[in-house]
Length: 321
Ligand SMILES: NC(=O)c1ccc[n+]([C@@H]2O[C@H](COP(=O)([O-])OP(=O)(O)OC[C@H]3O[C@@H](n4cnc5c(N)ncnc54)[C@H](OP(=O)(O)O)[C@@H]3O)[C@@H](O)[C@H]2O)c1
Image (cartoon, rainbow, N blue to C red; front, side, top):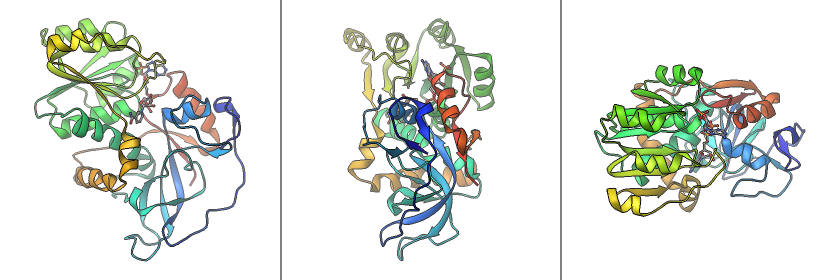
């Protein structure tokens, strides 16, 4: 599924290309499912921070079955795996993956669940553990809570010690969905600041996960408890907000940037250290990945347009096999 022009999702084109060639450093994987994320949409519109040369294959994460693996990689043909291709390369029938960014998919997780896993859960794990210093008993407010990053934040936070998760969503359908994922409280995008004030008894929250930006931002800072942190994840609302830093001073508050991709690119070994913390949670069932919204591979453009127009509930995945 190739981006041949930066004209948005409709310019995606299904093309025939040769399979990647196996070498001594990469695994070949038959792709069963591919994760679809907001950055994929931004890439089709030339709005992402990374700008691959045209044409390029879209997509960053897959779940599939190993076709071939180099000796000593720890993988064998037939293994169920999930893997990251980086910026682009995943929306394909067969992909070449580095062993550093490939992980065994636990039997408890389906192929479509696997394709919904790495990008968002590792991002959110990085955000909570390395950037947000989430502590046992913290309360967490999640904007865009029914989205990909949002659902990962809602389901991972309790496993990392959060005592309460408050989901911000824009529709009744999304509200029902985040309730089904165990959100402690659900508030509406229309009136969320007042509702958060009321349900926290005026204290505010310890951590805000913000993939939306725009006009949510100042009210997110206002909604922090003393010592609270706003995690800057992205800008689905398009506008990039500014901070009046006196608001931070008044509450010993922090605004913290989260750039998971550039963090692990500095040292791919960081991925396996993150995975070693997530895998036991998945294997024991303490962490369950919600089943994503599934589209056929050929409907990649529809999946991206649904993200753009806020129609998607949960993470989106394309299936090939
Ligand atoms: N920092 C990192 O390392 C990192 C890693 C991965 C992704 N990201 C970023 O995180 C953001 C979220 O990605 P995602 O895959 O979770 O996206 P997603 O599944 O589309 O979810 C985004 C949510 O944002 C909300 N939203 C509010 N205003 C919107 C608008 N104008 N257009 C679209 N959505 C809007 C929607 O919820 P409501 O309708 O309920 O408001 C939607 O559910 C993106 O900006 C992405 O680039 C950052």
